[in-house]
Amino acid sequence: MKVFDDDFNERFNLSLEFDFNEYDFLFFDKPICFYNLKDITSKISSFEQLTYYAEVFFYLNPDVDFKIFYGIFHTLGDREWKKTIRTYSKARILAMCQEVFEIRKQPYCSQWRRIIFNPEKKIRNDEKMSICGELFKKQLTYTVEDVEKAVLQLKLANTLINDSNIADILNCSQKTIQRNMTSAIRNDIKKSNAFIKRKVKIQKIIEYIDILSEGGNEVKIRELRNFIAVKDYSMIKEAFSIYKDSL
Image 1: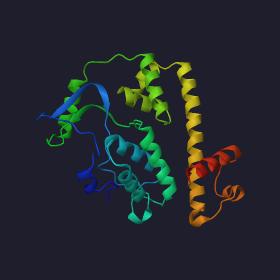
Image 2: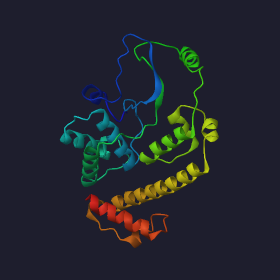
Image 3: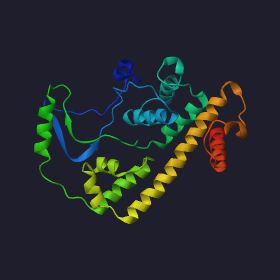
Image 4: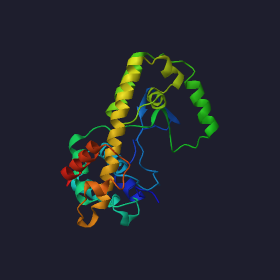
């Protein structure tokens, strides 16, 4: 079962659209971000994932009415519709949708492409590989500045940074990244990853608070600590604060 049914595909944009003009493929000098919500079949496993789908959906459909936008993600966040592993509260989804609607940021992109093949054309995989090989014969030159820009992009996307996803953004090998990596950039990455890991842990704590508070139950910090492997009291306190602000 798809998270976004065919009905969504008929009414909204679920991926970037390109005008191929009967060409077999399009080639871009610089990698472009390719968003695609059409073929997602695994259930939504976290509120963070639901939020990311909302960001991508809104980026692809910036003129969508807020009530419709909220209605879509309220439905996707309800276990009854079999698109998510658990139900998230209306208040929490409403707060998330309002934030996405107001901030209007470009979501993190995990798929960067320089070649987009025409889905209407039947091209064998070996032919696609041959085309890519011919187009990429010319080697590109990368600099420390390119790596710094890619790291900044990943930081803005609040994602953990490593050589692999830096290479994905620049469309090059990890060895190229390592050749252009400096100790200053490594230290910056270390600090950013520590911040993001803390943020992820706080998000997990919020998930437990949401679960334990279902049905109007009041959650105590002492009770919560029986369910989570987090010893840092400041993180638990911050999670409670964020959760209360979202209600």
